[in-house]
Image (cartoon, rainbow, N blue to C red; front, side, top):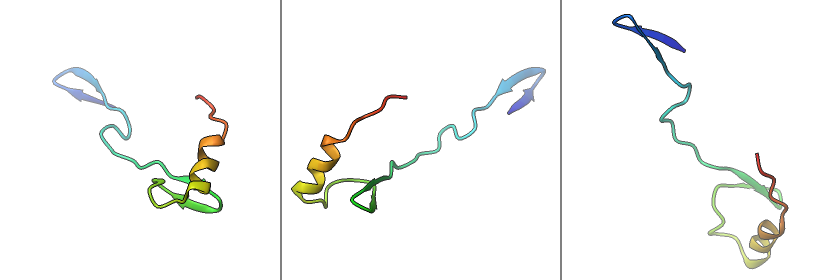
Length: 53
């Protein structure tokens, strides 16, 4: 989005400064952290193939 500020073009990024939480689906559950999972579920997450963007 472009705005003018005293004849200067100022570009603002959409969503800049907005925090977000990573949500994952592990064994059918949507979770943000693994702190409540047992060793089996943690091992499943660790063994998954990680894809880079």
